[in-house]
Image (cartoon, rainbow, N blue to C red; front, side):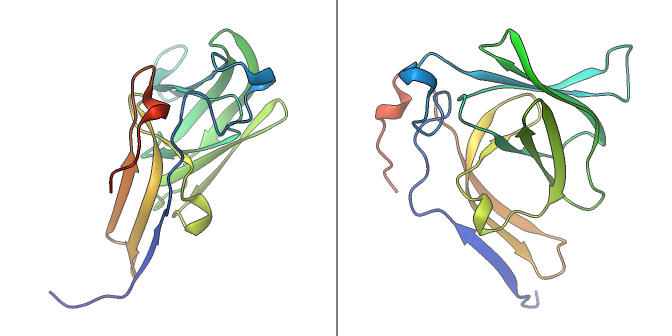
Length: 164
């Protein structure tokens, strides 16, 4: 195969916690969380669930891999109270990631190829699994990419030390 130039970004130290955000938890409440509910609006009377992910309340921007072409996003405080919504959001053709950003009561979307500024952000996969983007590399033509995402689980996951 011929050599192609590529752009690569990586994280030195990934964030260790998902469910409690980056340490800015409301009033120090480690049990506080937000549910990011993403539904495709291309089917069913109320759409079809694409992903439902639990993230810390301080997460105001998330990346979504392989999002639906049209979607509705609800952000629910502690899984119950609607705190932000985006309706008729669209994925951009040819871009594998959408960044969802809470701005007051609104959720906005932007299709993108991740860059250095996105390293360390939460990534939601189809089905709702959430991790942290550690590394992203894309070929010069944008026809191939490689990425690394870290997933943590369990009630004591913030106590885990990174080994590599």
